[in-house]
Every structure is written in C-alpha cells, then in structure tokens.
Length: 117
Ligand SMILES: [Zn+2]
Ligand SMILES: [Zn+2]
Image (cartoon, rainbow, N blue to C red; front, side, top):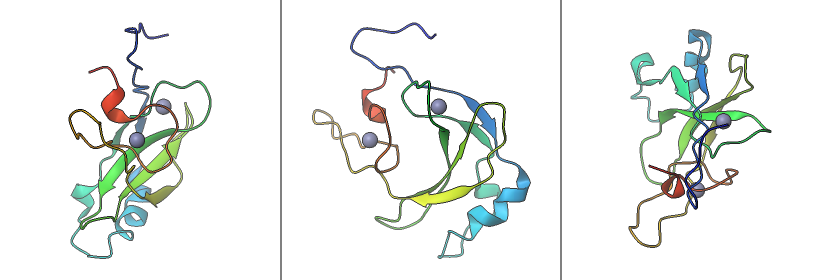
C-alpha cells in the first residue's frame, strides 16, 4: 500500500503498455484525421485514485476541439489492454484554482486536482 498524506488521495500509478495492434483503433477515433501513430501514448500509467477493484485507465490520445474528450484504454493488472474508448472529459474543476480534472467523465475516485502532488 502506498503511504498516504492525510486529506490527499494517492494516485494509482499502475503501469501498462498499449500494444501496437491497438494503434489503428485509437486513430479511428480522431475524426479530424490529423493524428499519426506517434501521437498515441503506449506507455500507460493509471491516473485514477488508488483502487483495489475495477480496471486501470490511462489516456492514450487527446482529441482535438472542444468537448471531444480523449481516447482512453483500460486493463487489469498483468494483462495488456484489449480495447480503446473515446470518453468525454470530466467536467469538474478545482473550486480554488480552476484547474480542470484530467480524468474522463464519470471516473471513479477523486478528481485529478485533488490528488497528492
Ligand atoms: Zn489504476
Ligand atoms: Zn474528475
């Protein structure tokens, strides 16, 4: 278990890897057509609040334009991701600094700006 600072949830940080087989699936989500395979993040790191159940999630490609969200993948520990999904951005922002949450809409756990820095 990671050590924790009172009042600040820890980030999961689980590592994963997106196999090249899934890159074409990622690119099909970019309807603007400007993305290249090099725009896809293959070194994954779960950015959710530390969790003991459910899949790990990592952003693999931003989508251009407002309100388009981003492409995410999910995996369970010890397995490679097998699917990618376009998800809208979490609409929440820090009430003090206006920093936007970097997670997807409906994500479990704390918002990214609430995590221990
Ligand atoms: Zn995780
Ligand atoms: Zn959020």
